[in-house]
Length: 433
Image (cartoon, rainbow, N blue to C red; front, side):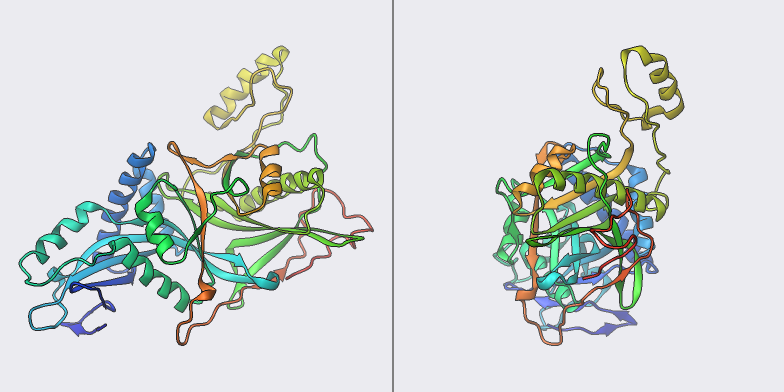
């Protein structure tokens, strides 16, 4: 490993691989023109390739939104760099000798550790290594005698380096979702400790409209802000429902993070449910429905949708009946393509358009059943069913590394959907982990 500077250029921290190739992961600097140009090109290459593989559509407007999210710090980008060692044993140091061959896109989030502690984590959305970016690196290595690419894939090499960075940054988990048929990336992740939940009790569940509450009891939902280094983070919060029973505490937490659908360039809600002592299935479904509604309301209040796109309004509640077709026509005229309606002939009201919500369920069959019951669908990207993955970084030990515990701030703004009753405690009474 070596680092240095040449002609005022600060070089990345290089890690030598077998065969003589040197790799580095460097944080994106939005004030650096070269970084910005490289980031835009790699995001275009990577997202276009991702869109074509999954049968999705690439959006130029989405690219602009992604760059805005990088500029305001809501998303993180790490540039993947490579170079060859020169004949004299020194790492090539000129700008033309260093190749930016990919990028990793993600954002800071929160996971739950032992004892109900909220711990810093990072969600990895895209791991971009476009083949078009590798060709110049391959061509530069051909004249070098005795130099070759490592036997393991570059994705595996960079994944190991990424985990080291995540640990040094204080993270306890790497989270994400993958296509289980994408053997290249799943193998790279598995080789570095990732666990993929492929059983019938795990899935990524997607919501594109709010659940209906008319046939379910509204439940009290409490909001808890999350603070990093003493500062409340506007892009994350926790929703909590709880009750005391004869058998003890029953509790459901939703850890909600403002994520990003990078192909579309639109904000979404990422939700991790954590359940303590499962309540009855009917109660659990009512809790999930109320928490999803509360999450959307809180996201609206925090203007999560606005910076990168249009503002989504709320649709009216009008029964879709055969005798009310004039109301249907009038509403379509007023709402355009933002109106979501159930199947023709249904007596249910219109659903509200919602920022896409992804709920990551791992090893909890009852949670899956409850989410499906209120309208959740398996997450399908293009024509691929996605599954959740997690890497537990607490098992890694690196010198001078420590896990960042995220503090909680009980907010007096109780966003309950009905008054709390005396059996649950006083209205507005919040608890924190």
